[in-house]
Length: 197
Length: 124
Image (cartoon, rainbow over all chains, first blue to last red; front, side):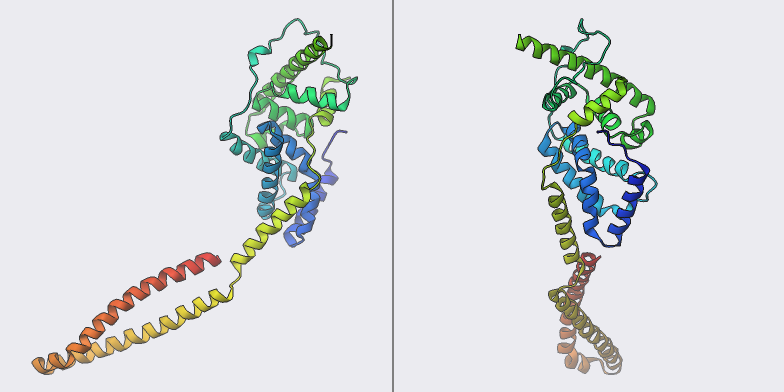
């Protein structure tokens, strides 16, 4: 199911924030429930580690709660909160060596038939496995942009506000990310089929 | 299917990380812990009040001592002016006592000043 932040959700967030600022701390749990999965996915795409991502998001929620009075409401709560998550994750990432995959191993080859690999016949578990493997072939910037655009459903302007990349840079990262994802999935599926045979 | 729509559907099912069941309660507990420690720092506990009373009491006594020292020294200088050698003998002990008292007071005021600053900083 696609997660689109409707105006109703945005207004609802704002009402909840007002309640929390007024002293109803428990109302914050609604925001935690609403954004936890997407926030963990964002942090995961920076850190590539589920436990670290969960810790970062937990810290980010506590930071966001502390800074809630500074939230002016001129942007969506989601965008404001994702910026906290992204900055916290990037800070954590600084001191950590990531397991990266050699990009040379992923050269567009004869598997290119011009269509995105169809995974609809796979189970959700298989889809998760392939997508997670494929995302590792993307650079950090590509991964962040792809996640924010396709998973978090943010606009280019919102991504620009969040990441401080220029719109042109985001478009390039999205284009390259899609291409890399496409080739990575082709390669992964090809290897899977070869292993089966 | 449109590639963008397909990618959105694919990523929202395959790339969405699920938070553990206790995640929300863990976050809320963390927030409550942070709040509790914040309030603890903001309110004055009985020990703090004792320190405040001590500072006020010592400050008043110190002020009284300083005022009396000034009065005494003024009187002394007036008497020295009148009868020089005898008065020096008479007041030598008093002068010594006040020098020691003044030095102690300066030291005490310095300590108190630091303590007050610490307490005020702690409660801001």
